Image (cartoon, rainbow, N blue to C red; front, top):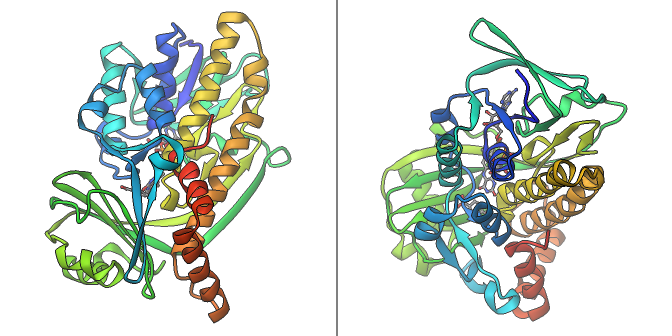
Length: 389
Ligand code: FAS
Ligand code: PHB
């Protein structure tokens, strides 16, 4: 089988890239390890930057997002019982949209299927061949059938645990990593959100986040120990702990209910350089990971897709290599800014096991500076709504 762009991974990065390429008549095949239902069963990101919204509009996949997404002009930040608001629209003129990654992925699958997109599910034994040549290929199996996909380019959109990053030789690839000494225990509940905007809470018991998917589907997180398992936490224990971490006024009006999903995500900052090797291009979580504190994971995958899509368009439409040759450097410039913001906001809002009293004083002073300083709030707003592509 032959195609122009072989895309490994049918998550948001791979699907968005495939859909954008298709709109320009550039052929691609997506190879996905799991089933569509499995991919759609993952509960992940919840906040979309305008950059991603615009890409979904360009891909012709933004109708439901605009109908069901919730526009947020700001967010609340709390430290103990002190609560203040960061006004995104006042500082940047730009809001964010709350719309679950699951729904983005659902919309992208629907668009790919409506346009006859080629997606292979349940692929195994994916191997990348001759990425550093003019004739790369991907081999894989489905069941007991061996397949070989000849292509012009390979997009590695297969997430942190995928095979693409490993295809770049160790003497070419450099990796940067910071593992955080805690995780996020998240639940979904069919209850009205405690507040119409998000609440990022720092408390002496640890971090908490109050988010939502719609007016009757709430998403809550609490910082937890890395040794915790979801089954260690009853719903009641989760709700009691959440109430201890958010301001008492919100705790009193919190509507609790049974969790319909409960999971723990480890937190890490991770970047691999370069994001390109020959005709292999890494995109999204295959190349970088951020702690979800800044809601940058999915949104930084989107800027990668933007750079790669435009580079491939330039190649096929104008016979120019400029875009693909500058992909890694352009994508990494924005990736590192997202890494910095996610690391900064995580350091500000979480309690670290080895935090000294002085460290704690620094954290309190930094939150107080954010609460009282307009430049600090503008800086946070600009990073949160998304830096320019
Ligand atoms: P993905 O990991 O989403 O998709 C990669 C796809 O490749 C998967 O479908 C996988 O099955 C497939 N794959 C893997 N190996 C393969 C192989 N060998 N062959 C074929 N296919 C293969 N971001 C936020 O902004 N906010 C959040 O709250 C948030 N929460 C998260 C919670 C968890 C547990 C995780 C893991 C991530 C979270 N993220 C969050 C980040 C997340 O949203 C990612 O940034 C986003 O999924 C990136 O999309 P992709 O790059 O497509 O990677
Ligand atoms: C979510 O709603 O899942 C969410 C929102 C904001 C974040 C992280 C997760 O920073």
